[in-house]
Image (tube, rainbow, N blue to C red):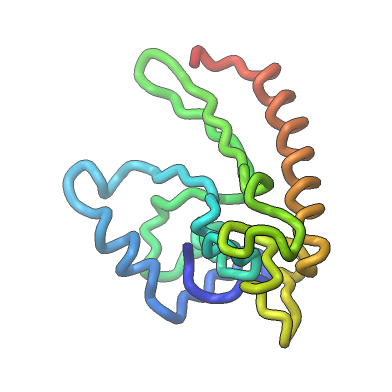
Length: 166
């Protein structure tokens, strides 16, 4: 996942480490890699494996940045989203969902595999992601559950409405 702490203003990519250049842009370049859109979705590694306060929001914000080093290929515009891709003779509706609810437990459970771990989410200056994520360790599992419930309703609607061949 992106280095740093979550809670930046939405759509604000602040890559002071230069990580996007050396982990993504400079690696995935060359013939066949320069043009395709990279469709992504957040996983537990974007939350540091056990830390909801990590810089996961930076992976979303990088989609919206126009500043260097972005080439505009990275696409992870939200925690969940869909994209229709049209190929020469068919189309596909891709649905991207955040399944991190399955790694979001009460604060004292499984600290090395728990996004809501009290052990790894620093409390000194407040374990919070601000307006776009969990506001506390205690609220964290419920936040991920609400997100999952909203995703399932959205996914069911999207699948029912899809006109894509695939």
